[in-house]
Amino acid sequence: MAEEGSGCPVPRLAWASLLRGAFLLFLIGVVSTMVICCMLCIRKPQESREDDSGWDIAELQLNHTGLQQDPRLHWQAGPALGRSFLHGPMLDNGQLCVQRDGIYKLHIQVTLANCSSTRTTTPREATLAVGICAPATRRVSLLRLNFYLGCTVASQRLTPLAQGDTLCTNLTVPLQASRNADDTFFGVQWVHP
Image: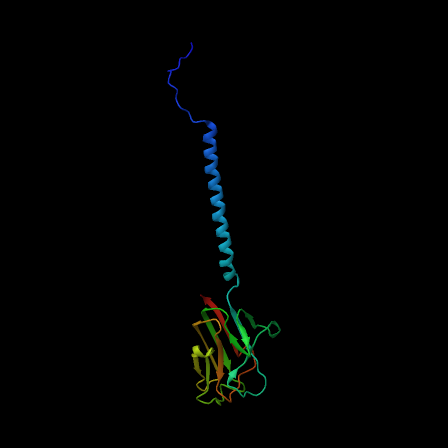
């Protein structure tokens, strides 16, 4: 039996028009996804470059070069010295210079040369001081340790430091620090921005 039409034409969307619209939406989605991914990829390497530098850290040994005319202790680091190293901070004339703002863990131990715990020859006022000595606008004492008739002082603390801060360690003159790397060392470790 033959079907008869109603006589009213029903408008139909052409398949070609529908496919073009779907393809256009798909293409816009793909392009916008690629743009967003590219923007994220460009940002991430910049952020990770800061983090890739790792934590600034230094472990220093005493650079004992003869008689001490200056109360400052001078430090050195390098693979040839054994356990001492610098990653981030630098040495400026034997003083530690910070290259990155943040909170640092500072630690120090100093043992006096020619000192015996059984024979107390350490003056009562013998002290070790650690502070920021440069730039001049940021000079401040961070640690002041008294030997109290002993031979060794050791301490650690968390402290905020800024790029360019130079840390100085001063020992009461005429006292001399031990050259032994197990007895006398100084270091910092960046722990937080």
